[in-house]
Image (cartoon, rainbow, N blue to C red; front, top):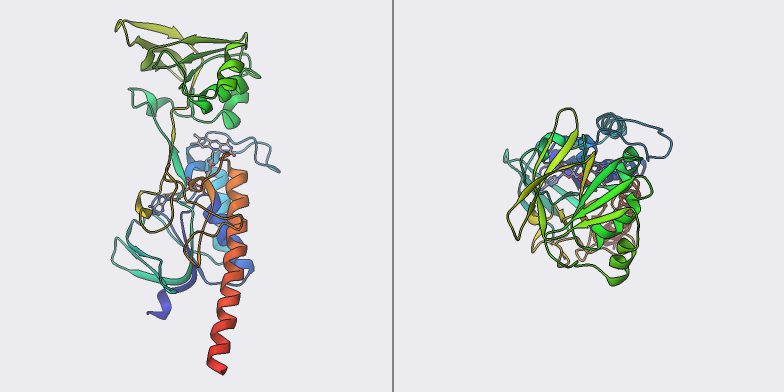
Amino acid sequence: MNANNHYDVIVIGAGPAGLTAGIYLSRARLKKLIVSEGIAGGQMILTHEIANYPGVESISGYQLASIMKKQAIAFGCDIRTNAAIQELSMEAEIKSITLSDGITYTSESVILTPGGRSRTLGVPGEDNFKGRGISYCATCDGDFFTNKEIVVVGGGNSALEEAVSLTKYARKVTIVHQFDNFQAFEHAVDEARNNPKIQFIMESTITGLHGTDSIEHVDIKNLRSGRITSFKTDGVFIFIGYLPNTEFLKDKVELNKWGEIAVKPDMSTNIEGVYAAGDSIAKRFRQITTAVGDGTVAALAASNYLHELKAKQKQLITA
Ligand SMILES: Cc1cc2nc3c(=O)[nH]c(=O)nc-3n(C[C@H](O)[C@H](O)[C@H](O)COP(=O)(O)OP(=O)(O)OC[C@H]3O[C@@H](n4cnc5c(N)ncnc54)[C@H](O)[C@@H]3O)c2cc1C
């Protein structure tokens, strides 16, 4: 074990959950390394404007990410970004992580915060209009569509519940769904059907997104007839599933059937010394505030674990 590359805690992921965990680990005077596959900030850097983070009326995601990163560094976190994990071993008391440059880091504890991503439609124009008419989060972006006409894509619980919640803002919501029935609870379907602001286009899918500065119209294909029509809209909300970034954790930590990390209320996983936080864990609401909260709990629980572990090790030495 190389002492220079040994940390008390290694945090995997540098989104709001990981950066918050780093800040709180510093408060406990622990040596910590944050490792991230991408640049620091996670999904925040994809966000044009954040208006629901308490204490900050409005800020670009990039700016909020930069502030959190600066704060984590000022608190003494080592951060390695754009670093892919090649090997990960967490079963033993000493955990080890090898990055793609071949450097191995070890630690007594690991906090997993790899976040996740919304399932995308994969149609032309989708990447272009992300944050400029395309959204995957009603709580985050609904307000920007006040009095506008929007399309919601999907037919599960999320799509129907979010469509109903979007009627608080939008003048009209059109749900586009690929089947002739919904894969959602009956009460969610009834609530959407009884909402006068919601209309439905069934057995259809979106095949193209068009506009100049932001979305102006979409191509909707009827899957029965194959006919494509152009549909005018101010925005498209896509709720066709969520994918946690946990592929690299398969067989390393307990995941549920959706690939989300199973955690207890203190964010501990089934592996001793390993904690998880943020969008990658099994939970209902995925926001910056919830990620920051989870990161705090995980860091405090990991600090506690290390405190007890070190006390035990001291006892063994003196015995
Ligand atoms: C377009 C958009 C707009 C949003 N708007 C808002 C909003 O206005 N308000 C709000 O509260 N929330 C918003 N959200 C949700 C919010 O961004 C997330 O809930 C939050 O970022 C989750 O934080 P996290 O730290 O758990 O994960 P993430 O932010 O996803 O960060 C994960 C980190 O892990 C790293 N990583 C992933 N896989 C690996 C790996 N294998 N190895 C190493 N590192 C890895 C990533 O590079 C990243 O650094 C929005 C999300 C999107 C996509």
